Image (cartoon, rainbow over all chains, first blue to last red; front, side, top):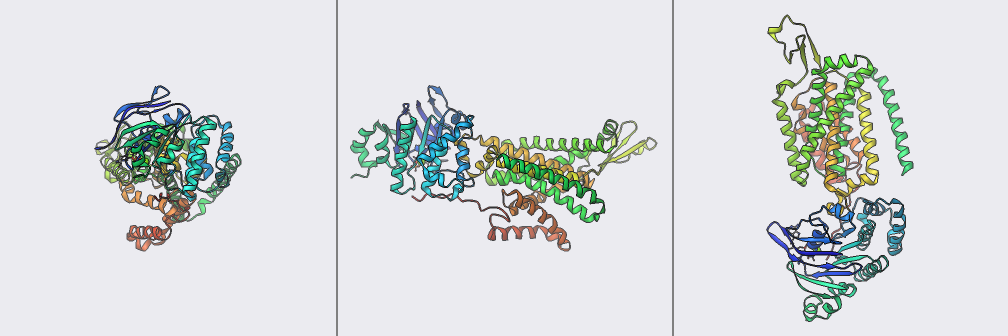
Length: 236
Length: 346
Ligand SMILES: Nc1ncnc2c1ncn2[C@@H]1O[C@H](COP(=O)(O)OP(=O)(O)OP(=O)(O)O)[C@@H](O)[C@H]1O
Ligand SMILES: [Mg+2]
């Protein structure tokens, strides 16, 4: 469904990613893991058009989307949940969700999707009128994911949903991600530092190091790979 | 939502009636007070329009005086150079004058917003301080250009134009034409309570309504987080430019109201200090609270009048006021506290 071909991104003189080629099949969960600064966020931002790639191509459903502006890419059904839960602090929970549906034409179905979201994250329904900035970290993450769902995407790009959240809540959020994948048939590209957790829900994984892919394979294989275990799963 | 919009409609109509009513009484108001009331209205327009750019959309523009100048000069030169044509076309009745005035005001506003696009599109790629500096630079350029345009009085200021029967137009009496008939067309004093507060009501109601709509929340989203807004499919550049165009348009109209009230304009009326004054109103009012900004515009118009004896210290007082505000009430007089983004604690 999504394919990048030898993608390069530079920030000025810094080469953040050099030659990333990944493939995300429809209805699957694919994860990108790697240490801080490996280039995971950069890869996602390049896919959603927020940063421009200097080389390489991005294909979405076999259409070349390289260089398109972000709003065009969102309109095609690729929705990103940015790193650090960039929610709109001065808008209420409800308004945040409505911003997610910003590009949608089918206003009448929005109600139904809201119900689906409240079913997954009942906490959000209780806090509809609260302003986004006063939510707890975990609630903000739920809101960020829900807001992306409101655009009725065909594919979700998730950037470190576990960042700064208590382990117990992380587990819930990952269960919800799986639920979204199963019930909606949503294709998901998941970026994570928590390699163990990411590999436990993904079908396929890529390991990034300083801007290049050093390893890839089915998630279960990666999980048992001794190098991965040593570098990312905290084993000696 | 529907109910709310209906309510604002009634509010707007009520406001219109009140404005008309006061306008009838305006002849009995002391001239000095009347002038201050008009200034209040013009400043409300300037501050609420800048608030859309600086407050709601979060782009720090420091060049509002430049857009005001364009509106003031474009409308004033139309009203003078084209006065004979306008008079023959529209007559001198109330309706004619009103159409004339609306026409020149709109031209001033449109000219300002065209310049707004020219300034805005390249500048809005800049952020924060850089944007402030570049908009400030542009508005100073506008002022310097006007200072060098002889047909609108250059640095002498502009009052009107002598139009001779043989078609010669000049700012001064021409001695060679001493036996030719002429008429001096000065900038007509069309601005009154009604027009000023009509425009103020229009901008307040349209901005409040816009900000409450799903479309309008896009402006706040751009301020809160540009990356997230982009990720939602919001064309952030379009929102920033739109805010700039609307803001410049109303600043231009305010300029037209200003020139048609004073009937004399000088480039110095639109210098850097004027821009700072308008920014001060927005900050004092709470960066994104229309109500607060209206109150702040009134307060900062009245304050220098109350402190006439210490006029020369006005800027110092502004600065002090802003510093005290930033310490005691960083959210502005009436602004709601802005939510700082939580930093992730890893
Ligand atoms: N806007 C930017 N300007 C300059 N350099 C940047 C910018 N954003 C990222 N970088 C650099 O690019 C490299 C890759 O960053 P990126 O954010 O993609 O890493 P990451 O894998 O997402 O890391 P983390 O797990 O810490 O989020 C880093 O060296 C980073 O310093
Ligand atoms: Mg990252």
